[in-house]
Image (cartoon, rainbow over all chains, first blue to last red; front, side):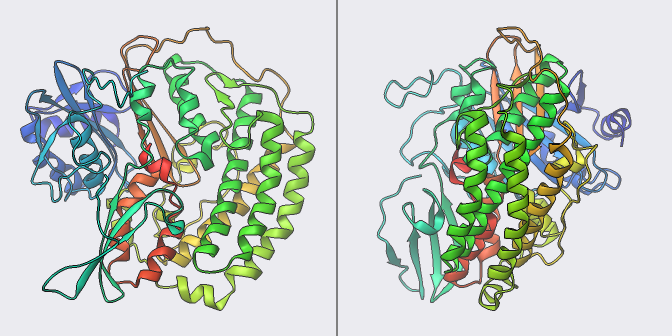
Length: 151
Length: 375
């Protein structure tokens, strides 16, 4: 499906979604609360079939966090980027680990690095960092003089 | 994630127990810690614990310039370091909108495919070793050594080459490059049949591989598996075919797909990819055009504000490089979507119900490189 067609189809069904300018693929911003229902719809809707989540990450914009989901369809070969802004003091978004199982590990990584809480995640524990680690190392304001990671 | 545990611990009230494999275990080919719940010899659950070699490359890259950060990416998947560099260079070039000289494109693709052969060779030896055959390891290293020498002459390094830079490649080819690559192809064409005779047709090897570690097509997509792991489950996911970069759309090669979904299918895919890579090199090696090997770029690179994403096919699967730029000289955020990380997440699903001995064979066919998973 072409970019414009994809955009219209999503906006028609989800009026709260906003298409963003620029980018190689269609970027759509959605409220965090709508994300899970949208994710299920994107995966199962005929003509869309976004069955492969190829990248899941988070960006710290200091004022807020942004979750970024890169989706592609192995049937139709179209790509889509979904962005959801989260409050930085208590970032919460619903998990998609059961929608795309690759999200399981990726969400655990974002959880420990950015402190985003994924509700209903099957196993939300630290994956990479030690259990007693404090703070969220990938956030912009993280300082640790002993385990120095900033150059 | 470090936890102090006993090596074997019984779970009270059940027949199950927990067994630690790694972090220092030869079969994990690196510092990977697996917490395995077993009942007798049957695996109930595999829980990977990562982070023993995490260097926080993504965070480091946030304070490095667009020329500097590429060097740290050679240390991710060190067996495909050229291809990692390539992915990053493509992403920066997308932002800069520079045209790469024709000669540089040829060199890049040649280097990528040589890297793929070297990586698959090492994998072939290591997997055979995992199931108990030691000789293939030495044969594989004999052939891989020829590629490493070619790399050493042109790039100055044998493992972390750092040869591909934004705008092209760092130096021109060594005068001996063409002759040596051709000599290698001639040599390897006969030796790859030896690989088949020694391992592929071996009945003991086949019994260890066939029907083991089934990953269905739907699961492979859902777990985000890419590369030979997914192609052995019939998922068409070769980035070189689907989203061609550089010269790949002009080259003739096949995407190897298998429908058997088991360890043996993953083995066959990689062996056939070796032949495809040789075929690609043969098409290019005699036709390298004359000209510049690097485009003219500014000394200090600045990417316009925005998001950039590039995908390349490494020896292990799809590497994604996601750069968020704020218009400065360093990336605001950089994310590497490494193939190993997603492939590893399917390990638990694939090994459940199999014997402990098969775990090692399945991990071997996943071709895990731990620094690629941890980054």
